[in-house]
Length: 416
Image 1 (cartoon, rainbow, N blue to C red):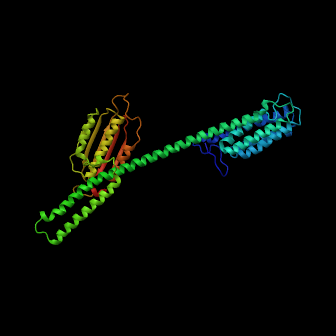
Image 2: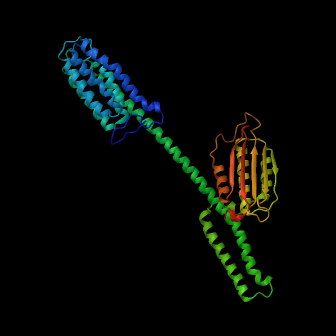
């Protein structure tokens, strides 16, 4: 449903995603015109006694503008309201039975209620209040000229019009609130995904700092101790080693200062040495103790620390997802290293393949620890794989299980 808009004409429900909803106002307007136009003409001429030309003309003026109400309801109200008042005055010139409603016949009120619904769905509250006040003022004023005396039924025009305006406004505001809620949920989900990505990047940066800091520390120690370990070094070589050690120490200092921006009071546990391939076995053992049968195929290959860390985190998250969403499911964890495509020293570098496959939960009635996932674990996996230049495939299996396959390059120059 469309909200209140300014500017040019706007069709009712034009913002709806459903085609039948967008067509509904036009269809209703056509049905009302087809039904009310002949009924109003016959009622005014045959029962109220107006001449055919006057009755038909009033009927057209009171009903036909309903088609305009689909796009310009306020302009349609000007025409119909004036025609209704003119029709009430015209009926004062004829002698009609006392049982018939005046100043507004029943078919006229049906059309006016439909018009008020269109107004309530499109116009502002101030405009709607003025419309209802004008309706009430005209209704009450005409009652002073009632040919058969005024009664409570003569106020039906005002009461029904006001109720139609209230119903339309309530429906419009409820739909608008639902639309805003959906938009807010969409924005919140996007912000949640973005926050998860940033947190994962910060965590990766902290972990990579520990990996790189280790190598930089080794470089510093080797450069500082070179003059004691190696005999008869020329002065220029000693100076070069001293420069290397100084540069390494400066780099470590810069890294620690940058890391202070990323760390907070809740990350003290991350100061421990970062895990790698060797610790995946311990992780599998811990999951097995949680009654999750895991078959583990280890890999003893030497890989860069950043790749080993990424592999560990991917296995950790995948196994955590098994525990959360498929408790007790049989799981396979396989690590393997492929040789470079060009052989030793060839153009293509080797890759570490990390494969985690789990079947469905063994008990069909088993209740997952989490009924619905947020996808944050997959976000972290993809970010880790992307940063090392690898690829990730993750998705459900036909039997109800899940498969995660990551391929990580082993040549650091592939992703540095």
